Every structure is written in structure tokens, then in C-alpha cells.
Image 1 (cartoon, rainbow, N blue to C red):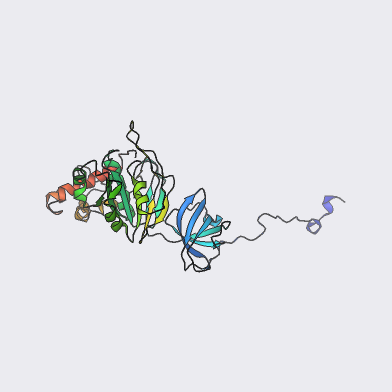
Image 2: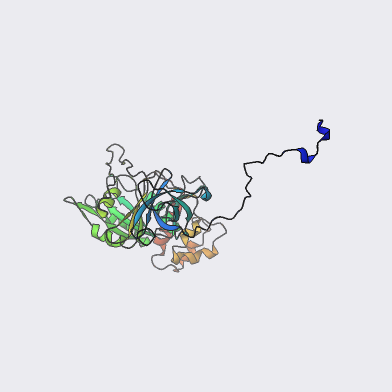
Length: 342
């Protein structure tokens, strides 16, 4: 038989197995999902804490989960509240799936450097950024502290300076640099094996979700171990030659405080890029100065000769502390383009 004698009824059509099922944009609602808190992230596995009222047998439990394919490239970080399905029993061989990330109340972000437009979310849903810095051994790095303050203002977090090693250096000269900003601070010192000022730090952390940042060697892990018994965060020593410590925290982890609240210990970073931050968002945290920007030229970076803030301060609109406040604001804005290693 010639092919010219065939019609469509004589041809056997082999079904295409791939993609034969009709595609739909609708996704499962997962109404029975369990809400949990992400307390650790390690190589694609997420350690999640399910509260006692989260189903199961009425006990709080730790569940290991992986990200569902439907979330795509969505980034999940410590502090996220997520919806889990699958095996949420928390058994040693159990593995659940994260199918949804709940709305975030805050996001602490950074970029790799000031030329990188890609934002990296560090922590979600925190309300306080604790900037840990040593007064000596190693020497404090004000520009990096300024960058952390900018990141805190951008994320809507309340900044808190935690100064360590006050047994080596008087903290007042350093604190005077930040006095115009009105920052809250806590000073700690070694005292025969104990840490003076630890009770005050506990009070400032109570009932809060606090992120601790600080370069290596400043005593951040030492504070965490003192605040959370059993945390067992590895501590490091300062190199006598470079004056810097070795990074000991390799991943962020959320730890519950004995009374109430959480601390999130973050790994050290060499740079804290701020390429994603709009200067106007920083000025908004200076309400005594923000009103003066109305007369600024379009795109003003607030450190130009045409900036209207100089006239605003000279006219007394920012009060007697106006000049110092403006200098501090410009120092913070300058820190966005003055990278410094941890």
C-alpha cells in the first residue's frame, strides 16, 4: 500500500507522555499546613520549630524540611515563618516540605559589595539589630558600625550597640562619636571570669527577636554562650599579627533565650554592601532633619553644596544638636560608598 492511499484514520498517533497532563496555574492551598519558625539553614535543609499548638501530640518539636519545588528560587532564611506539609512529626527520619513563606515584618539585607545590585536577605522578622564591637583587641571599625546602622534603619530594626572588653579601654571616648544619634548601648567587661553588664544586655534582649552582628574576635560568640546556656557557639582568638579574629560562626542560627525572646547569631562577613539602599530612606530616620530635604534638588545625596540641609540646620529648625546630627547623617550616608572589611 502506498502512503498516498492512507488518510488520517490510518495513522496511529503515539501519545506524548511528557506534558500530556493539562497544565494549570492553580496551586494547592495547603489549608492543613503547619506553621513553623525557621531556626537554622544548612545546605538546603531547614530546621524548623513547630509550636506546641501546631498539631501533632501537643508538644513543641523540631522538624527538618526542604523547600518545595513550587517555591522556585524564593530564598528562605532564619527567622522566616513557613508553612509545612508532609511528615511534620519531627522524627529522626522525617522530612517535611516548605510550601509557603508567610509575610515578613522585617528583612535585614545586604549586598556582596557596593557595586552588586543583588540583594541578599540575611534574617527575617527581627525587630532589633545588636551591633557587637570590641573597644580593643581588635580595634573598633567605625565605618563598618555605620554601615550596620544604615542597614538597621533601612530594615526598620532598632539598633543597639553592645560594646565588649571595656576592661581594656574606657568606652566613653568611643560612645561620644555616636552620641548625636541617641543610640542605645550596653557596655560589657570581663571580671574574674564573669561578664559585667550581661544582666543589662539580657534586659535589652528580653521579649525581642534580636540579630547579633560583629566582626570576628569581638566576643559575639562569647556573649551568645553566656546568654543561652548550651548554645556551644565556637569562640575564636584574635591574630596577633593582623589584629583580626578568625570567623567561627559559619551559619545563622536562632536561639531561644531562657526567659523570653530570641537571639539570632549570624556568621561573620568581610563586607557589608549597601548598594540597594536609597539615601532618602536613611534620612527618614532623622525626623529633625527630614523636613529640610523638601528644598533639596532632585537626586540630592545630601552631601552636595546645593543640599538644603545646611540652610535648614543654620536656621535652627533641627534644634541645638542639629549640626552634630547632620554630620552624623552624612557620615552614615558616606559609609554606603566606603567599604571596609570586618
